Length: 118
Image (tube, one colour):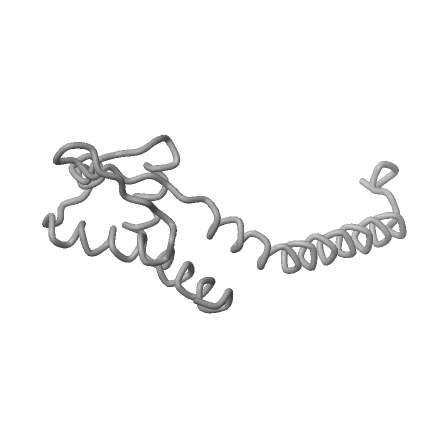
């Protein structure tokens, strides 16, 4: 899978709120399918489909302990998303910095109301 395809797979997996909630749960430690399914009112096959999407995107890894297959978070795809977004974050920070500077310039030009008229 190319880096661009992997990024697309990661964003596609993150597009669903159920999958994002599962990742948030896994950020606290590994969990079984039953534990991941607890907060959701959906069938186990639906939960399994969500887990397969996360697994194909490389966001989770599933182990094997006896009859259990605990899932654990794999952070590398999230690091790649962060790296992809970094230039956009810098762009917005610089834009807000310029806006802040512009607003300060405007405020320094306005006459003060401290000596205002009554």
